[in-house]
Amino acid sequence: MNLDPMLVRLLAGVFGLLVVASVAGWILARRATTERGRATVDNLNARTRAWWVMVAVVSFALFAGRLGTVILFGLLSFLALREFVTLTPTRRGDHRTLFWVFFVITPLQYVIVWKEWYGMFVLLIPVYAFLFVPLRSAVAGDCTGFLERTAKIQWALMICVYCVSHAPMLLTLELPGYKGSPLALLLYMILVVQLSDVFQYVWGKTLGRHPIAPTVSPNKTWEGFIGGILTASALGAALWWATPFLWWQSGLVSLGICFMGFAGGLVMSAIKRDRGVKDYGALIEGHGGVMDRIDSICFAAPVFFHIVRYYWGGV
Image (tube, rainbow, N blue to C red):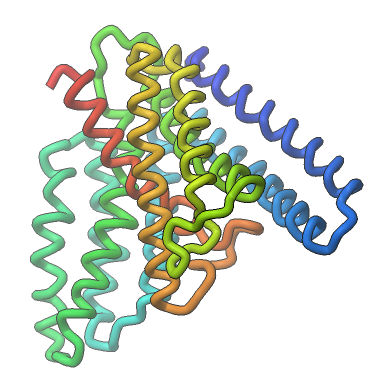
């Protein structure tokens, strides 16, 4: 495939940041003297190593083109769905419903993304799957906790599959006047949202004093929230050249998706606290499970997709 120069420049910048982070982590590890300091640096270095792997996987998918990207996000949805359902267990009466959810509805959603069928994309899960799930569970005849069990499955489908699938759906957009590829726009969204998480962590560790919701996520502070979102939004404004936006529009869009990313992380943290666990899984060193890493994208991707589609897609 012909490589988009914008995509290559963005990826080069990402790998450059990882090199800087790795060197900084090595230096900090040698200078850390207290037990708390070493623990913080070890966590930071674990996160950096995990980022190397995640960036390599995403880069491979992007260079594989639209099909590779759709497959990657389909797998992420499947793994996130598995983590979510495991954390919020259902009953035997839901097993056949879950079979449909995992092996029919989820793959079908991504086939629809691949086929660029926007009309069915926005309807399959919010309408048809929403109605099918309780019906299939009701046929099983198990009425114990029926409403709660059904809501868990519907919520899992919406968050892990429907919301996440908006990310690869960006590749179907035709944006008049945009000289880059949709792959660069997708990477821009991922980069801004994920760096917002990173900057919130850094600002929170260095200046954080006032928790936003201490019973939900005590490590999320107002200082980290404001510093992280503003820093990532400024970065988004600086990356306007990779988008169809003007620089100030890029800053505003980044501000919006950074806020939504924070909202996704907070909501997913509330679910974890309700279930009494720290992470959704342990697949990614330093990050927990897949859902722990894409929780911000779950909320940011649908908002970003529809903003771009309605304001820059000529709809």
